Image (tube, rainbow, N blue to C red):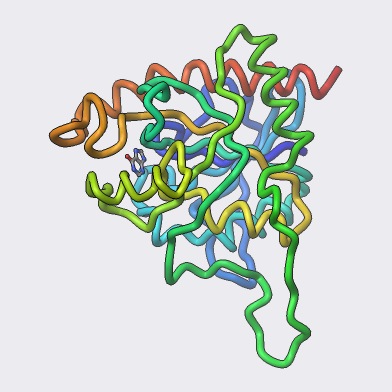
Length: 248
Ligand code: HPA
């Protein structure tokens, strides 16, 4: 079963034919809310809104472990994450969809592993390629079939938030090689890898990053919502096509 983790702007999936909601308890605490199960294009899907259904959980307080654990617990076999980001690279303007291929993690203090107990063997995961190649390809193919332009590849810098970055921080992220910046890419991707769940992301550029282009003198928070709303319609179509392709 495909799992979809919705971010800012995607607290529900209009095209999800809901069968039921399920409250899941995990050894790591409470997920962001009940899981929503149903079908898209006749394919079974489970959905969770990362920030809660009323968008009340900030990025640094999301219980990423509980969310990923709960999705696996109800039978998810792969995860597509939807996340809003700022565009650092000049061509990644608001409204652009990116399927990133790399991550740099600048977060701190988040519970970032399931293997956090004393007196058990240390567990490392290979994370050279943080996103699953096959699932990324499926997203790119689905985008093509759905007539949606997406950018193939990009380095996603995950910052701690919830504040946005300074212009100097964005300059630094660019020097580090980052193309987009968001607050939720990690530890989600690593936790999925720990549980052996293929994971890929659709990053929706909500704004130019701090100090860049439209955001040269500040980020216009009021326009972010409108940009996201427009872009999420395209994300829904892409996800629907993904489900169609998968059930074929
Ligand atoms: N920075 C970090 N996270 C974000 C941004 C940004 O500019 N836009 C949307 N999420």
